[in-house]
Image (cartoon, rainbow, N blue to C red; front, top):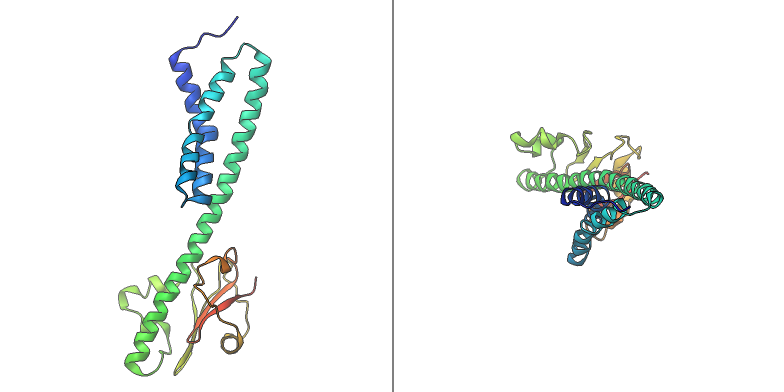
Length: 211
């Protein structure tokens, strides 16, 4: 004997399908391919299809079929949510990395302004910063204080990265010998190097040191 289909049951299983498979699938696509309009349409489809699929299974005549597909559905949903969780975590890490580079770029601008007015770089980083921003720029996006060293017309500014541990014993020597980037350091050339030192000096942005 078949199962009687009612609108509230159909609505319920549709919502369950959306939350368990459609939503994490859409979020995953948005995190990975957020700039693609086509993939946003795909994400929308993911929010619709699983509800009807789940409803069809729950209203099937075979109890065994319902059980098998329900287990498969739960397994797929669990896997999707785990993948989404990992990608959200990586997205947040990337955000901190990019913010640190953006903050360091702003600090360099203040250092250049100070040098232009005084004919030298400040001996202390705080001297180049507006008083109301000294607290904000006192630490990187990971919450660690910056390393700063200056000698008249030269300086080096370092973020120790996520782990807060220095990867170089002598940053002044590293400033003189380390290669510099040819492109914006917030691009893919620094992706995933969250624990590596981020280094900029009067010579430009240096390749990340360490991990």
